[in-house]
Image 1 (tube, rainbow, N blue to C red):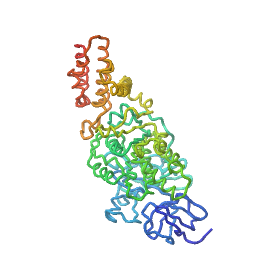
Image 2: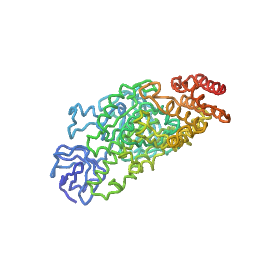
Image 3: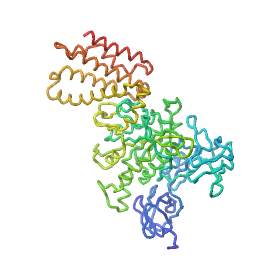
Image 4: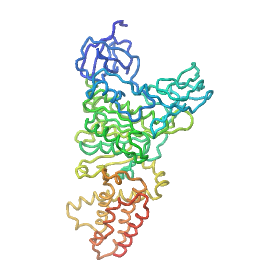
Length: 586
């Protein structure tokens, strides 16, 4: 084994090759060059190590030193994560800006959590109590919305006894408890570290059964996502992927939001960073940032850090899930992450797979989305939590046959297909109702029947059938004109037009229309569908002018149905009675 110090022998963009690295381990964090850039060992061969560097390597040359740290790339977990904005390796951007100004200097290090701020720790256990890994030792009021739970570290094996537990104000580096284990006494702080590539431990996964309420009618009604599920939003450039994800982050009923900007344009991320602190959470009335963590790795940041940003974000999300919270993670966009893998794979001279992506693209994608789920949290007490993952995919030219889209669709159960034609028509959200699907309908079916309406799915099926039939009839209309249609087919076109324009279209700038609770969504669609159900009574009549139906005053009321208040069930009943009355008069 060489006794020489590790040094750089080759630099190729974000890839650095060093020799004398016999003591290095896979995925070990190293400090590269005279400036101490953060890097990670990704390949080892006969004393040589390939290092993925998470900072700009311009000016770094052969002969410069490499220092081993003996640690894998990990995140610091504890109170203070919420309301933070991090880069891809969990350095707080606010601290980096203080140290180097608007343009980040290289080699700067900053802890993920504020080491000086004191938090009030309230114990949940007493001296002499028996605890196991994952049990809650105490709580910290992190924000007005989230009670942070300090848990027994997962590294503790078997049962432990609480030898000592403190209460009062402490920073994250001070000891708050002492546990007696089979190996001896072990001190516990409010913070701990977790390697980002390893999924956090749980007692087991549960079957998701509760829908993630997003306030978006086309999602909640037609393509629901369960809490603990995984969804993908593929779409061509300009179809509204980022806008849809931002809308979901603002309005969904998850208790904690983790938003990852992975390789996206800087102006899009700036919009999020500037907008979120001023937004009010519709579920709680508090500022949205009080339940949000952001990981920003824009397209002008080092490409290798994109991979780290995705794992950093999901590890933080798993941490809050383990406390028993419903967490939603938005990854925008996983295509940029895949492109970073392709670049590193090319520099490592690995055998390329389809379209130049590495052969392990599928397994890496599956590994990421598999970390979503509803779980029985580690420890006793019967805590359950969920982590919902929503990933945007940016296929070149909207071609869904490309590898990233195909591998993502293979492991996710919800597909919200965005359509550029709809976005050009200013139809928001531009989710194509003919291409999209959800495989969680059976999971949330009972919840919707019990909590919204017994005939919820029957009404949805009628509406979905009308939209599909409309698509077929539009072809006939284009070929031979509307005069060739039967009365029933004209009725289908009239009702499906109302579903599209009065129901599926949502105005994101109107606070009343941007977020709609499931109860109101159901009342709206039931009222529109009732026009079809009542209109069918006219079909047996011979001499009948369909223009009379189109001229009914109640058609205008349907166009304004979204203005009826969510709790005004009588208002929806009035419109439905008007439909019965006016069609009956014909």
